[in-house]
Image 1 (cartoon, rainbow, N blue to C red):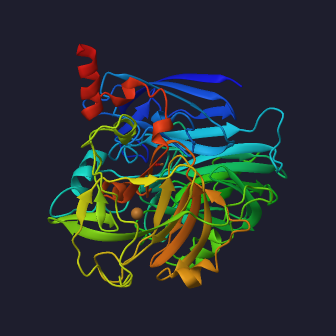
Image 2 (cartoon, helix red, strand yellow):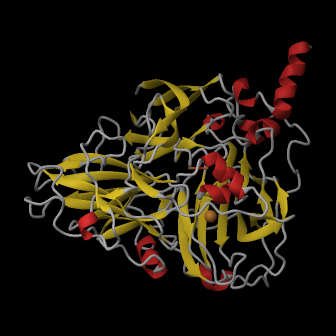
Image 3 (cartoon, helix red, strand yellow):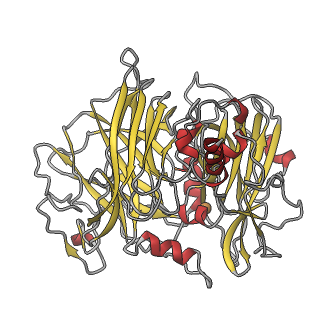
Length: 553
Ligand code: C2O
Ligand code: CU
């Protein structure tokens, strides 16, 4: 067990993720940020200096439980104040579970800005993974806009509303192609073949393999918007890990991955070794206006530049939701994984709707659209400060007669920042209920992510959740543990977790513009048990004032 120490500087950097120059948020001059590799039980220590010119920053360690360090969760307004330009903040936390994770900015739309990187936790030295492989690769997926993230934020917050549109390119480990294609010769649209030397900022990272070996591909999606489908041309993929949890291995030709999810897959290089093969990502769930992201699986000793002699894998139809559901429903916990409690102490029904508030377009949960307070909840609740947020609890449920198939009859909702106070050490069920958006016949995919916990995914269903029918379909035997789960259009998703991690935790749609538009809620549990919150985490809002006063006493 070690402490892994890092000194990071976050700064803007001119960069060309897809061949068109823009500005990214880089860490130590790198985009994506440096990969952290650690072993389970290690302490990660990151001294983060904000070298952005005029804006705050925080970094969230997505999928890490932050037991006893809820202040290190890196969520602006929840676990800490934004780190101001010129300031340094120290994140210190233990990685207590092996798996594939990532980190990303969690203030405004800093994930869209390119502030992300991989975080990989290996099993302990004397432990073995429950599967074998000869080598491994890491693949961090994201989407990229040519419009700056500041402009995107302004668009989403403006009246009349402006949607940011589809991304210009999909990135694999921060690399994509916009003005050219690796697969131009197979393309129906006129686009030129990429002529790459290999040292361009946007040149794809080639995955080099030896024939007849098994490789582990660690893949995580940090997309701001896009749901993706991943394929390796000609190769089967065996899915073995989801969000840092082992699952019952199953084999697929291609797989869906939503923002906030991570997987490990195994593939065997059993194809004709005189060829190279495509690795592709394609948009799902939204009419694709973004070209496939591509890189090459290079069988040694072929040239890396050798273009596969087949076209890139054809993804499933973007709106074939049954295809996506089939994939999600194949995921079960590996035998021996912790089982969920058989009953719940409290059940929340969370209806998501698109609404308007005073002319602004927003998302709401049970008719409340989340706006973050200036004082971090962790501080205001821990210190018992009044007036830092709405003390009235947000609603547990929504009206039983709500017609999820129609646009909201009353499209108006309100802003709010109340907290669901969860009794410590109780079992919480959440029923995510999807519905029609403002426009007719539109219901979107939303991948929901819970901070500080894994939850069991008990089931998915179409239409309105009705307790009597739905409960009988719950999987209490081997439901997968996850930290992110999708709710399909016009459907529901049921999940269960144990509220045993003292702190304040966000639960939100991982589509960044949706969170920006209010699609999230806040949970608090056992906050009085939290000790030793560094005061540097709370130097803003009412906690900031409190520290000032105490100084002068
Ligand atoms: Cu990866 Cu709150 O998010
Ligand atoms: Cu969403």
